[in-house]
Image (cartoon, rainbow, N blue to C red):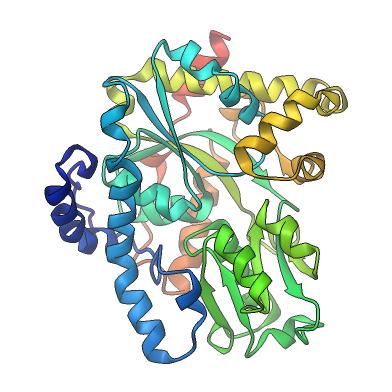
Length: 388
């Protein structure tokens, strides 16, 4: 199922943008955004099969409208040559470089930073030509590549371990995995935690259809937890830290990885943008790699610098005291390691294939491609390492 190129919604006038968003909604559905990307919020937790069908049907249109809304109101105010980058609230050392304006300095151009709550939203924005570079997890990456979205993975942001966890509410009656049957579990669809949840259920021998899995973005998960609308959630910080205060961990992505379903986060770029701006992509890798090297050289010293902690907390919404613990839940590959066989030079492609095969088995994507090589490009990190 090939993906047709979507018109750049953000560059249209408002009436045209709304019409294009509606027209593009069917094309966004072709991205196999499982049961919808943005159909969440309080209504997602209301029961009933009709409510679920309505949410799934409307969520595709909402995805297109969300992408338009995220870009349409701000792009006109940005510099004409600004690099548009979509980031998420994942805690990593490069947030310090982002806060310090080091990417702008490297590029010699303005950067229009846009925060997203899920990889599904990032993919939708890239499909609409509204982002140049974006941060996604391995699951949405596999979905996008399987549907032939013209992207390249050029930097492995992290390997996910204990930074993502399945937490069950105190008093929910869930003491063991089998108790999840009949319970409501929230997760951002088309995310690494969605993939990990399905993989965990498979490992435990639990039919996903016996669990009410609802789509919610991290901020909505924290709110739904506070209201008592959900029994469990699989998510990352800062929402993870919020719900763990009144829950217990049933599984982590480190464990799920040991069960055969590892996950990672990556930076991707539109192929057309990369072809026209290779120095920007290389520069992004260079700055990010330098930020990682600064942290990895002496984590204790880096963490002792309150300015680093504050910058990360401000960009992610995490509590400052949670930053050290969350950072410890990730593995951050160095710039020198990025192009090795363990990452972009080989194993990343294998991991995307394995993820795609699992998603196909789960009926979440239509087919597994014969070759995922075109969606992974180590050239930029090689150049960044050589000129660092």
